Image (cartoon, rainbow, N blue to C red; front, top):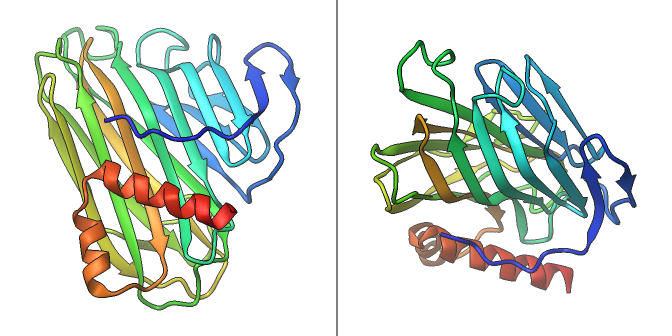
Length: 275
């Protein structure tokens, strides 16, 4: 399910192996996205406007676009064999509003398409399920803060290709860390688990009350996507949102909204905060 948004003006376009143009209008403490398959790892740093590969992975052929609080990743292969096998990320958008607004702190990733293009050598000579692991995180959130029981909503959605022949599986946990550690896991929401049949869509939200004191704190999403060889997700998204205390009925209603409903509410609040 595609989450519509008004994209911020692009500040930097980094074509791997080409020039980097411009600079973001707003820096973020440590806004990073990481993908991993069989030890092959890609780390994209939206603060430093850099991307790095390790464990046999390669950035060749990928396009990474940076703007204020946002990273777009196009045509990225995540594999321990360079650009062979592994998973292909056709398009992703990641956003953060660190250091937060008076009533909203959020990180999210959306408009994600993923294909499992693992080779038989990577799967032991047979077609099989494989796992792509991801993390998205930012540090330096100052608000909302000071609340020992702040509502934190974790959400995830996915749509599988109608040509798939096996169920896809996804999981994601959101974390708030008062030590402000990059990808810190001090406090967590319940884990979301999705099973998505061929051509189907699934979504879920989880609610937890976590401590936002002291500040600054970090927000992190840690997740996994499991696909059978050659199969795809045609859209996916996840979000972590910290809000100010609200009437219990409102928080409960938000937690029960479909993922796109939470996303729309988040982006309306973000727009109001920036106005």
